[in-house]
Length: 188
Ligand SMILES: [Fe+2]
Image 1: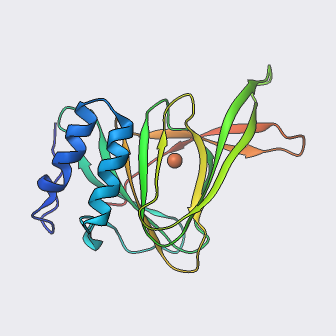
Image 2: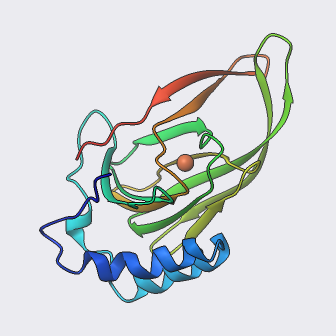
């Protein structure tokens, strides 16, 4: 198993330690508090994030827990880049906005049709800035998430395992959603 480290950030183990403790305590709610506190302290520095790319939002693997309990991913969103409604493969997650403005809408899965399509109910929508934390705990793991501002946005995500693929959903004219599998790659 390979432990990922960033040579550009000598303090990375110090940054990860409180996150690992919260994960070990098995409390996503305490993890949310830890992320907010680290953000306030300015711990999420620019080198944790990749430059914006024109054709897709960037994903950087910041940390892969050696025991596979969690990963930490930095995401960079150019204006208007976003992720359509998606699941998190049954993993819990916590995310925090570091810079810019992010739009998020939560969805609840209400029905699986016999034809393999899905029906969702729209839930909370919010426009978030620096320091705003969200948690995703299955079965409440469905949301869309994207840059809602005019500047590049950064967000940091902690998932309860290596999230390698997820389902992305597209809404049909009749209000039913079709799923497709999306492989989630790291840009670095
Ligand atoms: Fe997500």
